[in-house]
Length: 296
Image (cartoon, rainbow, N blue to C red; front, side, top):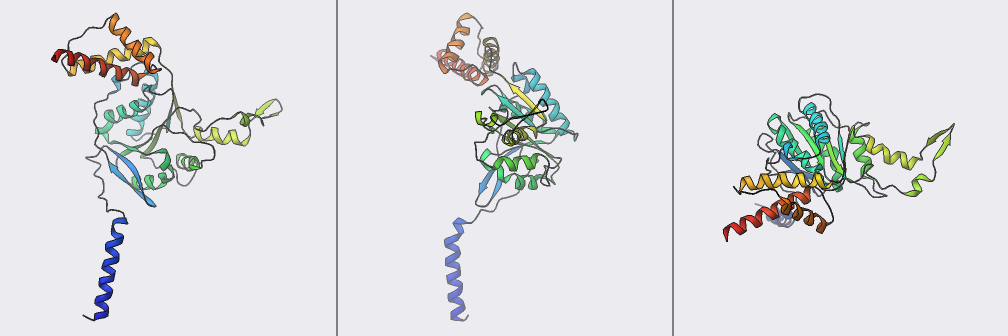
């Protein structure tokens, strides 16, 4: 071999050795028959879907006190899974009231029928067109799930979301639906200055363009579901349910009474909130203490 060619190949090999760690790893295609969920990861200028190992132990029956919201989203999801027209959904309201849990429970309900769940972070919404393109020709039905969706003033990613949801050439295909949760109904911060330029025309109020732009994003979701803070009665019902579930798994004998009820209320007061997440945490705390005492 010519000495110059050999030197060139050696230099090329040295260069490849140095840059190889910075190149994207080759990713195997996801087997959607086996994988029920995935998460979108951004990598360099692109990204990839990483399969997730998930459990399907959360059922719709575990969601107490949100019957109307549960039924509406369950009906919308059944339409989607069966290939019928269905709407993108925005679940908004108080934290810890079951918004994300409802989406996970629906995956458990319809996984056997071909429903799959893909998590995408709010900061990666600019990649939505790329994600949608990967899913468009697959036989499964995909719910893109964005938890805690909101935008701050000046951020432009919400415009990408608007175009994918509706009204552009990048509109989501029939086998893709977006479910998002948020503490804000309109997803964007509302300021007092937004309301200073409303106009009255022939007796009708007309919002300024800033307000119209903010409302337009939420309007892309055909289904709005509102979740409200728990009453004490609602909170205690959820506590009792989760104690029943976890005590049954541990074969723990127990009885609901005034002392246990007061302990649950004190737990909620100590955390400054009264919601489903708090109820679940108290149930784990109490059942764990009872099991620890039984071992002593």
